[in-house]
Amino acid sequence: MTDSELTILFFSRDEKAVAEAKLLYGTYCKTVALNILRSEDDADECVADALLAAWQSIPPARPENLRTYLAKLTRNAAISRWRRTKAEKRGSGHIELLLEELSDAAGSDNALDRIDDTLSLREAFNSFLASLGEEQRRIFLRRYWYMHSISEIAGALGISESKVKVTLSRTRSKLKKLLEREGLL
Image 1 (tube, one colour):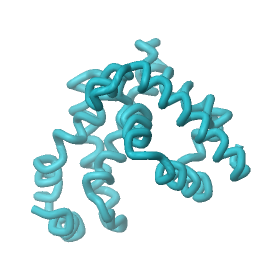
Image 2 (tube, helix red, strand yellow):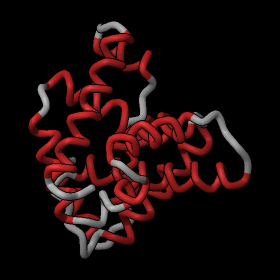
Image 3 (cartoon, helix red, strand yellow):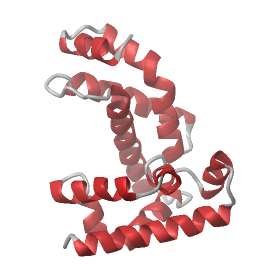
Image 4 (spheres, rainbow, N blue to C red):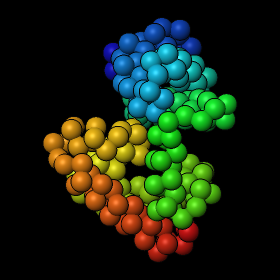
């Protein structure tokens, strides 16, 4: 089944849409949630939450890339779950570390919160990603979108952990300079 056929099912409010979306993208979405939560059960619940959110948001939303749309919904659900869990008790600090790394580049936590809300910041961020070389972009996205560990990134890309760390440091610095130049800090 193609994304457009699946979107048509959502628009026609056919309950098969959720089952088909889970069949096509459930494993991928679960991986996204697992990278954030490190818990199979919580990841499964986030996928279910994301599928429900898709059901509720399509229509009126008409995503061009359903896989990415579902991944974003899953990621948002996983981060929300992580924040609730963190509020209840301190965790391993995995997500805190990632957010701290990015906030150093962005200048403040407030700037990070605006990434989804401010069009100019979103455009600057997309421009930033487009300006990166393929390896830099892969490393950056694996770390800050998929929330992979340094060792997972190094293993997946066949490079040293030290190269991953240096690349991330330089990329964060480049992001900070871009945000300053655009007046977004």
